[in-house]
Length: 160
Image 1 (tube, rainbow, N blue to C red):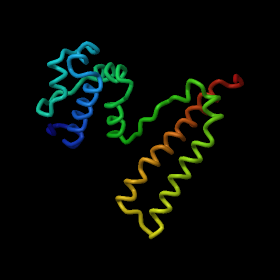
Image 2 (tube, rainbow, N blue to C red):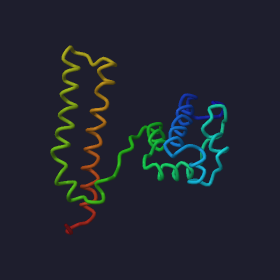
Image 3 (tube, helix red, strand yellow):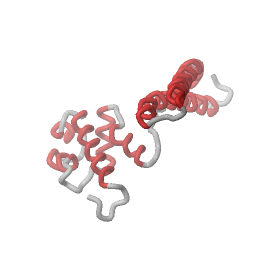
């Protein structure tokens, strides 16, 4: 799968695995075929590590919309060096801003405490770094929610 490709083979294997997870979350290939424009055998090929073909973006979008989770989109963002975070604060920015301070401070504070504990001996080991990552991801999500709420609120100008 690596000839003429931009990414390492393991990344393409991960995309196949995530697509399999998406199809499974959508109820399997037969049900996924009813949700998308693609038939079950073709979906099965997209899931197969032995088949070089990959699911088209509209098929992924249809399945993710059905499942309600960006299973494949999340890994695509990661492969591009981005983190995918829900834009929930856009719908009700004022309420999100009002509720944002405590979760942001708690999440960032927890991440900093975990990092301080890891660095207490002068070094953050790979195991300690891996253990801190979920806490940092939570902090990033909370900050992103505040960012989205503030952007949405700023776009509304003087309206409450």
